[in-house]
Image 1 (spheres, rainbow, N blue to C red):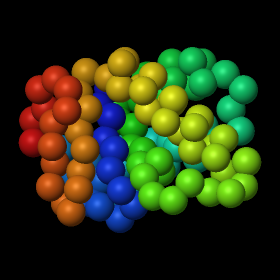
Image 2: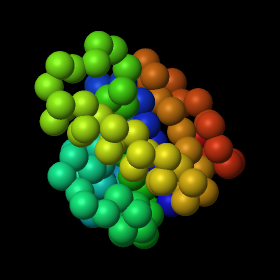
Image 3: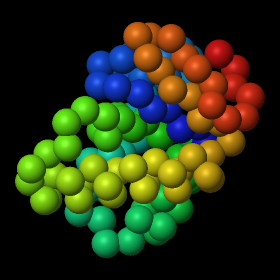
Length: 112
């Protein structure tokens, strides 16, 4: 499994399509994106990470940077997203951070 992470609108989906050689429409059958949203209300992040790691590719938007929200639920959601990212990164064969459309391999070897 390849984990792709980075800020919102940083080129993660375009990079994923380039790596997989697919169109944006075909991407949904081969990858899951916005995985950080799945973590928000998840009771068992380990089980979610196991389920997601069976996919070919997982895309997550980084949500931990910036101002810490006042709202406790939003803080908990960010915490869960960060924990899920760590669990997925540990399971991934390759981890790539995309920033300004530029991929940076953080773990493994990836065909860029």
